[in-house]
Image 1: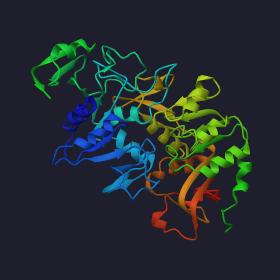
Image 2: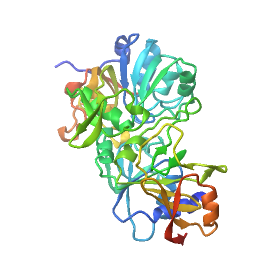
Image 3: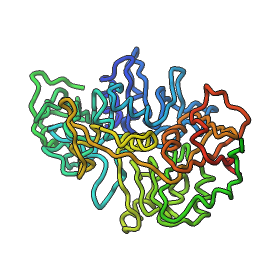
Image 4: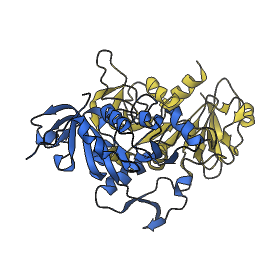
Length: 213
Length: 216
């Protein structure tokens, strides 16, 4: 199992039947492939639909796309709406969980994922609204950037949101974000606490019982 | 009543140098390529534009950006248009990054007679720089002012001669909001029909000034 699949499988365990969930483009999108049996969630795409699903061959319709502009499908429970309704769902606390990747995250639950000044400025898209309004914010990402920690004491890049992250899931560890530290609750079978700590800059407190995943 | 349906050449005079243009669509889904063609043909310069994203270099608003007509863009995302990033880095275009939900509500407010909206989105980030924070019943909100445009570019699935529009799928996005906020509202419809069931009208025709046929 590669790192991304391991992360997606672990994040999927956080989702509950019937929840409205927004998955970011990329790794977070993979979470939908690993939902446990009996867990059926409704996926929102912020460009204007609930009930997002994969493209059904032969049913391609350029009027139905995801937030990356790619054609997708819609389930029979789905609905289409405009951007005002879509972000009312997001900011209004109607989205239960959002899963997104990041460049940096820190021990205060700050997240920075929309620009590297002078280098890369993609923009925040819907991310600032999602981290502000979703009931639970899960960061899913590969633990480091080629060995350089991304889980920091304090984000250095411009913030996408302040004190908004609830949980961080990487291929090595699962953390809960407390007010000024991270609680290490799970460590990957392939790793150990020492390795996790050595690759994490943030202040980490070990849970009484650390599970394996 | 006179039909609002016109030939596409008739709307060329709507595009003048320096005007503010709102463009519906989301990653080119729901953006009228025919009206992008007409903006390019008009050769209007120094446009201030409002769009969810910067499109792609070869699709949507990205084509107008690539043609050098956009001096300033209010948008949430330009990640899929390297041309927009290049123009920004070279100082040839100003990009104002706005959270997507905030942009939607600023446009809706602009077309709804509101002065702005109060949102928690952006608090504690660069987006809040220079903006008023209001505490309402113990919770902080950013004051984001309303936005309006001179011309709004809308795409519809169907439009009738009165301008009523039906939109389908995820093409609604900013189209329904920008139809409120433009002084002149131009719709490009995939189909022009004689009747749309009033229950299925997404943009009331009273908002619309001109209708053209998409693709012709």
